[in-house]
Image (cartoon, rainbow, N blue to C red):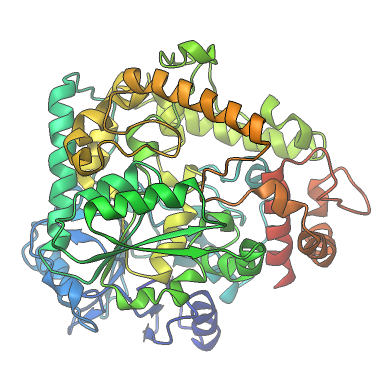
Length: 585
C-alpha cells in the first residue's frame, strides 16, 4: 500500500476512498475491510510483491517496499503479487521469528488487522522513514500514514504552535503534528490496538554505544551497503538510479556491475558542470544517462499535486521527481535506486560545527554550545509571529532534546534531528518518491542505520567513515571531480587544498570572463520567489493564510509574503504552500 486509514468504527467508506485516491492519484484500487467495530481502507501497493495478503483470520498490509534480509527477494520483479507480504506474515505470525531491526530494511509500515476481533497491529520502521499518525480521544481512534486522511473522518483543528515551528524550521517536533491531538507514533515500535494504543513494544533504540574502531566500522558499512545492493540485483530487476555530480549517487552507480543494464536520471535547470560530471561518471560505469530539463516554473506548477501527495507537514520542494515520474515512465522500472540520507546518517550533516577560518575548515570542531531552540537564526520571522506560539514550540523542542539526550548524551543535538527522521527537513523526499514509483534507498538499510547510531561523531566529520568504507567503489571514477571541486576517491585532508585552489581558480576565471559558473542541478529559489508566477500565487493564497492561521501573526489585516524582509526565501515558499493547503478546505 501507499497509504491506509483505520478507524475503530464502522463508517461510510466513500469519503475515505476519495481522499486516498486524491493523495495517490496514479493508483485507482482501494481495499476496504469493515466490521461492526472498525473500518480499514488501503490503497493498492505499487511495490511488486506487497499486495494485501488475506486469510481466514487476518489482513496483512505493507506500506512501502522493504527488503527482506532473510529471504531471496525475487518477487520485486513480479507485478500484482503478494509473495513478500506472505513471507512477512509467515515469519511474524506463523513462525514467530521476526526480528524487525534485522529482518527488514528500508522504509516500511506493517499493519495486521484481525478480522474476528477488529484488533489492529502496527509496526513502524527503525526511524519512521514512513511516519504513522494517530488520534485517540473520546472513544475514537484513527490511524493513518497521511495527515490529511484525518479530515475524511472528522474535524481536526490546527495546532498553531506546530504551524509556527513548521514555518520557521520546516519540521514539527516529534510527536506533534500540524493537527491538534493528532500525534506521530514512535519509530521502531510494534503497537497493538484493542481499545486504545496503550500496548506497545519498542524493538530498537539508537543508544549511544560507541564503536571506536574505524576500520571495523568501515568494513561493516561497506559490507552492509554491498549486501543491500546484492539483495536487489539477485532478483534481476529492471533497474534505474539517480545520478548527479555528487558522491552518493556515484558510489551507487559504481556498485552495479558494468554488464548490468541500468538507466540513470538527472533533472536540472540547464546543461552545466553537474551534467558534464554525470556524463563522465555514466560513461565510466556503463550507465545509460538520461538528462531532463526543468521549466522555470516547474516547482510551482507541481506544488499543488506535491502538497496533496505528502501533506501539509512537509516541504513540497523536496519532491524533486514529481512530473518527471510520468514523462520518464518510472512505472516501468522494478527498482529505482536513490542516494538519500548518507549525509544525514554517516557524514555528520546535523553535527553543529564551530565556524572556522576557510584555511582551517578541514579541521572541523564540534560546537558544544549548540542547542535546539528557535532563536537568533530565525530572528526576522520571530518579529512576525506572536511570541506565545514560539514559546510553546521551544518548550516542545527542549523536552524532545532532553528525551534524546537521555540516550545520547554526547550527540543529542545531531540525533534530535534524526530520531525520528521526521525531524529532518529533507525527508519529504522519501514521502513523495515512495508514492510515485518503486523507490529504494540503500542508506536506509537496517545495518547502516545501526552503524550510524554507534559511530562516534569524530568519524563522521570530514567523511572519515564514508571514505574508508567506499574508497574502493570509486575506482571506476577515481579521477572525475565532484561538482564541489574535490575527488571523492581521496581523503578529505588531501581534497581540501585541491578544492580550495580549484575554487579560487574558477573564481578568477568568472571575474575575468564575467560569467557565472552554474555548478548544480537544484533550482535557485531566490530567483523562483521573484517570478511574476510566484506573485500571482501570493495574491491567490495569502487571504487563505489569514483566514486559517491569521491568529499566528502580529498582522491584523494582510500577510505580505514575497516582499516581507522578515521572511527567508524558504519561509516564503512554505507560506505559499500553506496558502494552497488551506485553499482546499
